[in-house]
Length: 455
Image 1 (cartoon, rainbow, N blue to C red):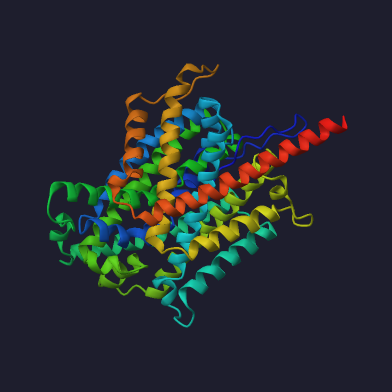
Image 2: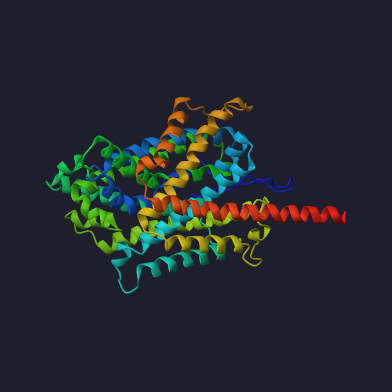
């Protein structure tokens, strides 16, 4: 989920190669969205809303489309690899706000990776062994990803295409099993209208909002694609189709998977599982090897987490190079040419996050941080309407970013019945960032005064 911060590269630096065509961009978007969210949090969403599991994913899809429209306009208008931080700086010209936006995006990537670590160490991994405590597995998972990132291993977009197809295959297995079960008279359709909340209409509303806020975790990722703008052929034309089709494809798959999950498994069973889709596969009445599906799921969450660790470490490196964070955090390992300090920093944060919560809390933290960022982006697109550019680009109807900002604020608010630990966790993360920013400001001021005295 992380993105890069605006940088001012020297004039002699070569530009990035525009090697990504429309089809590869579309697969990148789909691959970035698919992964941990649907594989890990489906059961927790069911626990919040009940058998009507499809509804939060449908509402999450709507909110994603509203915000995606804002990203499409902004990336077409400013086809640079910087994302939300760039749009915030251009709209509001407040360096501290730009830093907060960038740091929230970075932290959302780390909380997402931590949620993936918890998903990896849960029921999917238990298909193979239960000899190691789950927290130890999750920590080892994060350390392994850090080691890979430190060695400089990165996936090209074409590799991402292969990974996307593997992740997608697991969801297609679920849908095929569900179709077979329904065709042979299996499933319980009455569950689809079953809500967990009892009592007043307000209780039902907050229950659905809470489930939607958590389910939105499954849709995060499309915002990463804007960082490929400088490497995309004709980004102004390619991005609208890629982002809208990508969100539509994944949204459709998610809603269908949610329908199948509720049809085949009671929400109370889904709620207690850290591998909810494995429960669906086992309940489908088809002899599909559970270990094979568990392996696909482990692959999906690993891919998502690795991308997040690598992106977060490079964002940390970029912030240090921009002198927003202490310069030491931009140190590069000379032999591997990887941001060693950034990788160590984000790894420590990710391990800390793993020990503070389970999949639901960590996934909700990711969603909360990005909903705050999305609110800023939706406002930024309106503010930047006064800024004219000399090329044609997609322009979203004004009502969409307005609704997107309102929806993001509502889902980020206490109306969604988010656990207090989520706000505390997000607050601690921001406090760490603000502390580093303040230390850097003091150090930079000291150095400036020292240089002035020498001069």
